Image 1 (cartoon, rainbow, N blue to C red):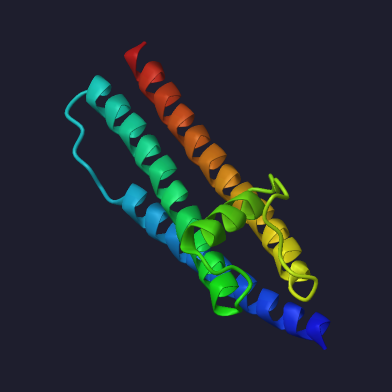
Image 2 (image 1 turned 90 degrees about the vertical axis):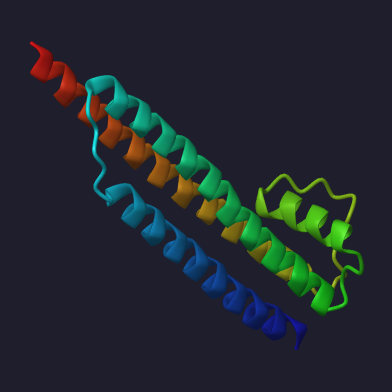
Length: 149
């Protein structure tokens, strides 16, 4: 019985966190495509750098929201009773560090495993997004350098 309940809760959490992540990446993409006025080459490069930094902080914020969501679920299930403990467990699980000093009961431990897989995929998705963004910035820099010749 608990296996099916674990799978149900895990499936809902994966759907919620993937939706949050997708919405966040769509929002970031929209913000990055918003037209800006760049009077000079150095200003454009500086703005691109600021944009990348903003994306990194935004990705961190997205992951923080997802970690908090899992922490609230653990508390709602009665597995972890303190916010700090729930956040600590959720963060170490989401990032796949898994220290092991805080553990879930036998009944809910599959949910913890699902969070690990979920976190791994979401962090990988963020990494791919960031790599894609920096590749576009590099292409932009090459375009500027080519125009100087």
